[in-house]
Image (cartoon, chains in turn purple, blue, red, orange):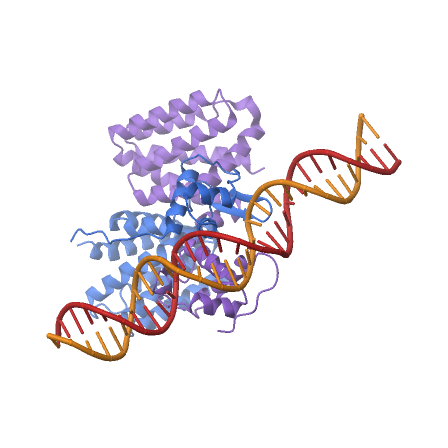
Length: 226
Length: 226
DNA sequence: GTGCTCAGCTTGTCTGAGGAGTGCTACCGT
DNA sequence: ACGGTAGCACTCCTCAGACAAGCTGAGCAC
């Protein structure tokens, strides 16, 4: 099996790391049954409970699946690629580019497909955004993000919605920073653009919706990249 | 056959589920320190090692972070949403729509930014695709997917690349099915469109690149939705 | 062939015992 | 009064051993 022996510190994590290497390295393909806990414990030079916890950790990541009486089986050879990780490490410009792509397309689709309910939701979200402008920065950003989320949802494509949700945490973080830097000077920042966007969606004008959202995102982002 | 499989569910999973509920339910916000192992064990009515394994599982999911000597802390209140799960459950039409969005944008950006190396990679990928057409269906699809991946990579936006990679497994699966249904009649299916796409990227013609990729995806997809 | 039983393996669970790291508090010297 | 430090309580970390519960395949009876 060629497992290196363990050295210091959290043994559980080291054990998990070694097992992960075996799995992602291809030594144990999907469906493989791992050696028994006692065998693994001996190979790694740790106690059985330590091995068990390492297995649990990898099970939490979706790599392993223990079945009582049968053994521990490989469920996948790589962790769910966490898009959010990529987003955190990405540059503002790259993020902005992709966000622009998603939201312009969403605006266009929303204008084509919006239902009465969608329009009502969007208008309510706009109103909440306006009210939140008088309150804390955080509340304002939350309301803004909620509005954009509602726009994407109005496009009626669950895949697009799921995709945008991946961006929400990073987007929120960036916006909070931006709003705090601007201070209270620009309360209800971008209200007119948002109102125009919703109007375009409501009247079913895809071209105008796309243009407005493109300008709006461009404006807020330019302020953020000094 | 509407039988749910019977699952006695190990105590560890039940314990993890209860803890997860506390976390996602908001009882323990991010940063909260959980009660000690012994306390939790008593509360849940299980042994200490069971609690520890449950904590490890949630740590694997990215929800908790144990720190020796200090305690166990809440790192996030919801699991990484697995975009791949959404994709698997999504309809072909929704997937197609988003894939079209990504690839048309990628084609446009690639035409604007491609380097010499990008062009070389794309041309090599095209050649491999041609060769693979004479071999198995699977190899052909793999080569096709590799070509599309190379196109997105040539756009020079890591976020876009990471995003497209989320689609690759689902895309591959769908293509394999399609190619098998078509049989060998259409060997080297879509060769001219792909060649035209690469030419447009190479000569730096964003509009043409976008048009070609749009037609190409449209053509293959229409065959797939009967 | 079909179905049953059983032995041997596996994971599941609990307990008790130390080891090691963290963070707070009270003490002490200045 | 203040700052530094030693001690302490609390926490997670690791191990060993024991038994329970579940799975799998071999062998057997029909």
